[in-house]
Length: 512
Ligand SMILES: Nc1ncnc2c1ncn2[C@@H]1O[C@H](COP(=O)(O)OP(=O)(O)O)[C@@H](O)[C@H]1O
Ligand SMILES: [Mg+2]
Image (cartoon, rainbow, N blue to C red; front, side, top):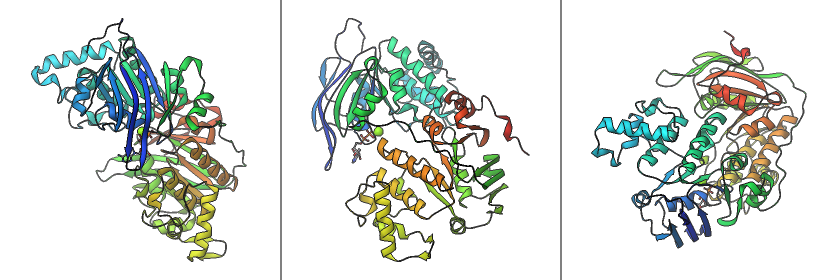
């Protein structure tokens, strides 16, 4: 496709797009436009239909109704090949690269590159990189790359194949603030070169910084499109959620209590013998929320599992109130009062039985309650009702199989059950992953209430803005090592970003 600056056609125009999955109307009469040389943010809560809509542009799904125009012509996109031919490229949430190949080989794989000799391909990739100021070593193996580098390869691959309309689905979810800025610089260069860009995100500050216009989806409908320069985060939230919302997390000031969890010089090895946690030491106190930040895969999962007794400890120790937990079974660790809610990619993967109702799921755990252990269904039913009420779980009743609840509501049941076990330590990983804004705030409130009760909370998080508001202290992991533990009130997002890539380190953690 050639780009002509006098071209007044939209790069993409969607009119009345509809798409249903069974009885779910994922897209309901959606309109959207983006011009060449423009960045459009597509904003909407989880489940509002963003990915579905974009998948119809990339040829993965076909609309049930409506029309798609590319550069002024009505088109039918039946396959990813059709999309590619029309100059549309999409960077998905999960990359599709071949690990054992170099950047250059990945970029040229399955593309026009087959006709070129290798030297020409390198040259071409280099030119493309320089044009948009990508920083990339074409000969580096994908398996040795950071997430951010892999994303760069994905984008270059699309550009190499002639994409002029680029769609990015939540590209910043896996990036540090600095990496996000780098990506945005690349996108701004691409915009200057005349590309049309649609970026999906639910981070409002990113929308404000990168986009020219914003289209907001709400429950499968396009509610409005606004010029970024004429809006603000509050208005965007209101459009996205459907009602006004207070956007700050309540910060609870508590007296720091006793040291409840002491991790000392902990080293963990994976099955290949690689150290995934290295000489990690930290303390968690009663009545505090200690955040754990780091790019994905920095050892967060293994750390949680080790504390829960699910991962072998190679060296060092985890002490719960001076008691070494090494060698204890997960059951014994739960009985001590250490509660774990890890939200995996597949929410039903951990701890909940999909076919059972909420009451039975409550009973899957034996509760240490004041009166002793109970297993009777009446009490479990009371508990289930309490969780449903307090965490605002949207379900017809407590007898509905968990499988029939939406992801966010499953997550609330999971956390509610952990809290109901009356723990003294809560370890929660990715507690709000995939939740809508309302539900996220319900969960932050629930964690704050636990903190007020004197519970020590280890909060493994993804969103630094949230962690700065919610946590008392934040520990940053980088390649399994602690690069610093900082007071949330005294630090900045930029500084945390530097710690995440260990461009700086805080002095307090080099114990032997
Ligand atoms: N392949 C599918 N099968 C069934 N339902 C789906 C499928 N993909 C998406 N949905 C449903 O469509 C709605 C919109 O989903 P999605 O487009 O992924 O939202 P978003 O990207 O905004 O989070 C959700 O209710 C989701 O559960
Ligand atoms: Mg999505």
